Length: 193
Image (cartoon, rainbow, N blue to C red; front, side):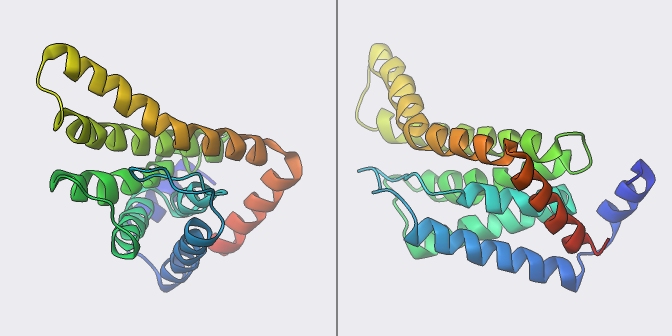
C-alpha cells in the first residue's frame, strides 16, 4: 500500500466495516481478558493470553485514529467490568489512557514489521500509564524522598510482572511465520483487499 493511500485511509471517516471488525476484536479481547487469564495480582493487573495483541490489531488494520478510539473503548469496558481503583486519578490513567495506548500500534500500520513495532509501542504506552498510576498508588503510603524512590521501583516492577510476560509470549507468537502470514491475511480481509 502506498503512502498516498495510507494518508487517504487515515483521513476518511470510520466505516461500518471498521466498526464491525473493531467491535469483534474488542469482544474477543474482552472474552480473553476475562476467561483466559492467569490469576489476577492483588492490586490489579493479570497476564492474559494475547488480549493486548487483539486490541493492537485494530490500529494495525486501520491506523492510529481508529486504533486509539477502539483501544480507549476497550479500556472503558475493562473499567465497567472490573475496576480496581484506589485513587480517583487511576480511573483515567489505568483505563482509557493505559488501554488506549494500545492503539498507538496504528502509527506503524504500513511499516515493515508494523505489527511487531506497533505491538511493542502499544504495550510500552500501556506500561507507562499503569506505571504513572502505580506511582500515585504507592506514594499514597509514603512521604519521604526515599519512599518515593521506592514507589517508582515498586510501580515499575509490579507492572512489569504482568505486562512483560504477556508481551514476550505475544512477540514470540507473532514472530512465527505462519501466524504472521495469518494475521496479514486477516488484515487484508479487514481492509477489503
